[in-house]
Image 1 (cartoon, helix red, strand yellow):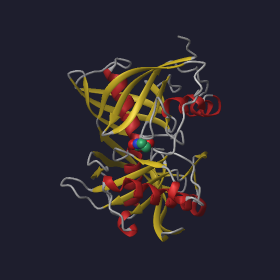
Image 2 (spheres, rainbow, N blue to C red; image 1 turned 90 degrees about the vertical axis):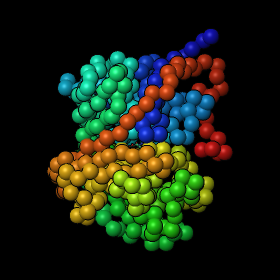
Image 3 (cartoon, rainbow, N blue to C red; image 1 turned 180 degrees about the vertical axis):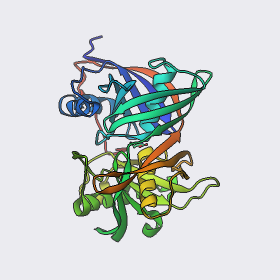
Image 4 (cartoon, helix red, strand yellow; image 1 turned 90 degrees about the horizontal axis):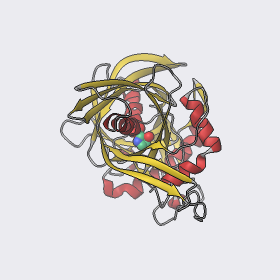
Length: 350
Ligand SMILES: O=C(O)[C@H]1NCC[C@@H]1O
């Protein structure tokens, strides 16, 4: 056996959303912050992202995280998030998977009943509280980066859909949000393909008509991800969302071939973006819980803990809580004679 790479990983999901955590075998990534390490990886080692996310080692619904040494001395660990089309600066489901893996595998010591730790995400420092019992992380609550709305009730023109009312908000990623009722679509999981097609058309139109840049970091632009939301259906929930993650480039000449995947979880950053919009519209107050359900009915609980300002935008500081579970450990290898050095995608499922 000849190996040009051997990558160790712990397989985990947060409320259904897979977030593989890579614990070993990655190249050294230089940088003075995890954001810079992420940029280095994007420029010099993107082949590893494709190798791990694409077939035969990955699948369209998969996200990966690379554990890296933190640059901020107050942090316990750093992590770089890798998704199918981007390196998101922050991700809720992935932060939950990373915390669960760090504590349940002993990379960071676990203290029961509560372990407090700080993660350095590309978007900044994330304070985490993990409830732990009998060696298991039973709940992860983290204080997210400030979330804010940049456009409220803007109307964009979307081919085949006409005028669509949208909000654009940051929750650690830039989301375009639209009411599924306005589009006449039910957020049931069996409508996944239709949700993806409409979401990708809306996101593409939003980038062209309302493209946004983060006021604190001009290298972060969007929207890169879509949140179709609806009224709550289950008791004890306050809202519902179906988040579409792109899995391929969008070609406006071939909208029916758009590729994307639904977040299996309620999406942590998407929940925070939704909370920022609700707060900006006076519909959610500081201290109020917001229980958001994803397509499979699993929930994340958000709460606005304070308000702040990001550039010219009023912002909220949200906490987000959910649970993660480990379902395997793996060692992935690469043979230098393998014809698929970065994996592959095929149009039947991507
Ligand atoms: O929970 C989240 O924030 C995310 N889940 C996958 C896509 C987003 O990064």
